[in-house]
Length: 490
Image (cartoon, rainbow, N blue to C red; front, side, top):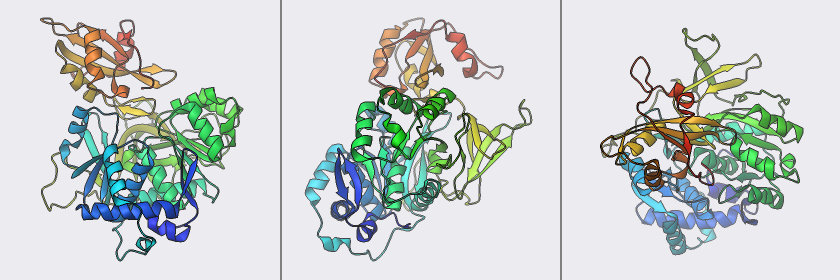
């Protein structure tokens, strides 16, 4: 296998091999490399170079992939932004100064039209290459505060993660990975780098739509697929020809996979492999392997090559086996982008290479060495594979006139895993209606963050220490919660 994340290197090695399928049309490594080289030259001429940080708000499009490839060649970093975020959310996300330039879908169209295809001479080996320790991406995530934190991922991090994934899956030349996860997520972005390293194509889908995904699986002969549990459930419901059983592996992550869903996969011979990962670890850090025997409770598999995991047990916990999950390895992020930005010329912060990272998640190993994750980060709501941070949503709700306090929590849901719910203490002087609150949130929050259950409360439950008692919220408010028309997906 190659050790390069350069599309131009791949084009020199396997020029006519397909690198990408989009709407059924194959694009070779050589074809994409000519466009990438031209775009990279155009970006350099525009002042973007090593160390630049480019925020990218774009859908799953070929143009987005070309931009990622071009930034890899230049030595610049990408700051992916979810295209479903509202303008105020984008402003808040980028307020930390993590980007120098903002590009949207329309900007990419203009840039690619202006650059045109590059002559084949541009595919000659470069005189210098980006340092593996240089920054490749600042991918924003959040802790319990809900304030965005930019995980700084280097080229070396992505390379190590892609290599570990390849070792786990055992790539072959006939593999084709269907990418229906958003490229603004580390789960989507990592598919691009994994396939680039292995010199195998991926099938780019603009969005998740179960019938369209199944048609792409059939048409483009996919062998690999990455999904969250809610996606897998939708695919199984729509898969009347059992096309999923033709795949070599279906990687499932982002949230706990219900045993009943794994039972259905086993019954239909769908090769579902459960995984565990996080942005700070470049996506997966544990996974089942294709050769593992089927079991109803596989946990999240075993650590990938190069990953060390330890469980920090809480002496006060009723279980002596469960504790906080810590990990380290070459795919662990460099650190978080400073929330107050960097002074010109200041060095990037960096973690001790040997330091353990505390994920905040709770888990344990079984006798076979498989990791079982029992609770994701404190307070985090995972709905349809999307992370929602209660503190962030609460701040937005409390900014609505007529709302005094808000408490956001997850409610179990058989389809989405969890849905977002909120209990509101209204301003007695000018109380807002729940309909008014829902209408306000529709233009202030991305669809997956909006509460799908609301209720008014006279007071919010608190713990003895005075903190909001989210653990009891779902049961406490269940009789009061009123449903609101849900979006097509959270």
